Image 1: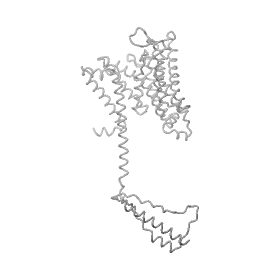
Image 2 (image 1 turned 120 degrees about the horizontal axis):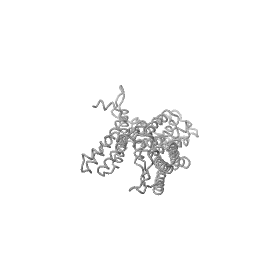
Image 3 (image 1 turned 45 degrees about the horizontal axis):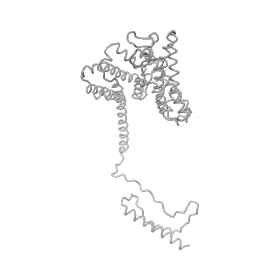
Image 4 (image 1 turned 30 degrees about the vertical axis):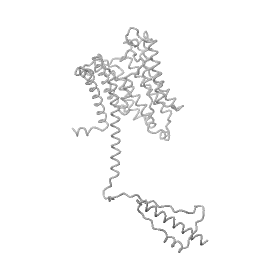
Length: 434
């Protein structure tokens, strides 16, 4: 068993450990707060994988999460920690819903591409506002993006309440988007639609862009060092703006995919979408690597679908899945920090061990620094030369200094007093000669 574990890279071991701890947190919550524990555990852990329809719903749910995670990857690779992807997702989803509901009489071949284009433009526009403020006015991009997300939350709630709300429902939600305006279902009976293929293509293209393309090189260079990027001729402002616009377009496109077949009603009234928060956590957990994002989104989607099944069974809050995802990220941070400390400690120990053939001294004593003589003439003045007998007499009067450091403060004070006395006699003899 240990041989198998040793073959797994340490980075993968950390992720697996954090994921198991997240599952254990869910299990512990069920055992503590649920009365019918066995049935509740079956609902949480087995329902997301119980049928083809459930597996299709799981894969459909992770699709918009992948787009948000990819947007987070671009922004955080550039080391400009904006959270505008949440606002891009919400505003795009809201405007796409209103556009499809208002244009119900128009043909689908026109409405579907137009809705996707609107989502891209709106998402990029939202992400560009904090970027421009950061580049032109040096406004903190994290703070400005959070304020913008809150403003968009209020704006979308206003649009929902006054223009899209379905009064026949018991909850605040929009009218349902007609099924003819959904994206094409690629596997009939599963609910997996064309957006799933879009997400897979976005993962592959973003990997090639970040690690094989010029723009990805610029993004990672600016993220590594702004001054070094400027030294090699890269424009900091242009690179940050490109990264933010691309990330916003991806998040906005994810909002359109969410509304066109996965969540046909806009339901986020006064709260941020859980799928966007899980997407950000997924990107953080995989350390902003595009190829690992679908795996982490699948895990978080499994937790959320299990939380929804548990909520339908016993009324247990489905936010337990979001709590478990946050615990997973925190545990991963802790394990990474412990590994870094262990690596630095091992480097220190290796540096302190002498190499082969090198004698090992019992005590490492610091070298004694030579003391500067007092009353030395400045560089601008001509130094007075002494005759050979006078210099020999002066050297005879000077006490010989020890090469070893003085650990006793009394000896140190005594030698300093002898030094001052010798300097005084030298001065007296020079005055007599004059």
